[in-house]
Length: 606
Image (cartoon, rainbow, N blue to C red; front, side, top):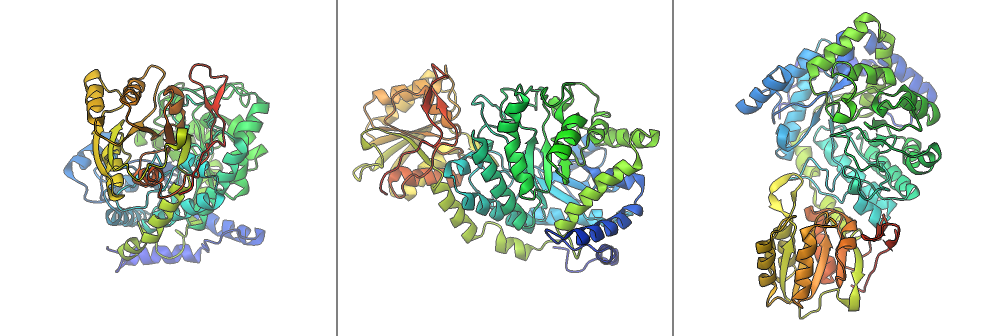
């Protein structure tokens, strides 16, 4: 770490901000809040227009280092961003924040590296003419949508927590995640998802939602907001005004929510109201049309009627409005990339997330300010809101740097992992258990684990079937495994059937079974062998509707290590299943008929 000896400029910058009165206080009294705003406005008054515009943007970048990424990452940055490093990007556009991703941007390798990267970002920010620390953001929802894998505590995702129906568990999960993010120098997490997943065909929200009941989702959202913000991390409820009832992905198109105003008030609005009541500091927009809220059919991200009229006016939200990623097709269908950020600001947004071309977006806003389309007073409103959450995250007082010592102490701590394991056990849901097929009998020692084997969200080298087999091995079983994939061909199915011979039981995993999917054929062929079959849906609890008469079926809601190990312990009878469906499961052949109601979940004595 290079935070032992801060530069004179850094010390002066920190002292200046501290003198400006940053307190980081939570729940400040009105007089204190007024005093804070007065001091923050003093900072704003010393900023140039370009610096103010820069505070609004939260772009991506490539590389694991702020100043010395690999040559290939430098080349990608140069091709896509016009600079070689994120330090140069911050300097060029006076950025107020950045967002980390794993994989394609190569930002994330391990906890110590992330902390070093965060410190490099802060050094670059404090070298600006107006030295204000960066607000570093991430999408660490857990479950199927997670960015930091190796070394950090993996926690059940939203629908799994919804199946646990435990507010303390949801709050604890948020607090653990937030505590680890803060130790890594990450201050804003784009979680929790506040969408109510009332459409089983939803391709983008699905198990990222806590469930299908607005009241239950509201309770869980409020609990997670509290947990995150108790840790000092800024939570972000998303995707306003609600992305739960669509069969289209806003990454690739512009969905339409056809709810009436009464339906929106009853189904979509409650979780956002709950988040606001819990003190959420930021809310993310959705790129979709909601005619009941805005008859002009502007995407919500660009709609003054939705952002100013509904979110600020009716719901009373005073925090930071964050756009969903501006590179998504849902917000680019009507306007060019230079106009989208301008229209988002005019609609009421504050943070402009992930523009497809930072130069085009930044210069588009700059041109709008120079032409008078966006006033400097309007810029100041958004910068003030952003500085408020930077202040609350502790960035405007003292040092913004983090230490490797704290990373080693906090991230992936034994207590955090143990808590995550206990929470996961309380979320695993037993849907079917004919003739007490589970737990496995004591004489059942030889297992075959077979089926769909999606890769871990942050580690392609680890996949579901071998990891689940390893979990059973640790419990004392003699396990063989065969990953057949999500679309097994006839030869692979024949291989699975042959592998089942001589086994005491087969555990078969499925991932998004469709009405005509060949995963159904795999399960039916395994059932025909006469070997006892246990089915585990490793993503959607809806899979069981397509599988016929399986003797035992469970849902884990995701396939990360913590959920797979919990499922193995439940199947083995080391713990009793306690999860209850947070969504209804309709019959595949008659969606009007419910196969399993929300709240369904079986158990047995462990």
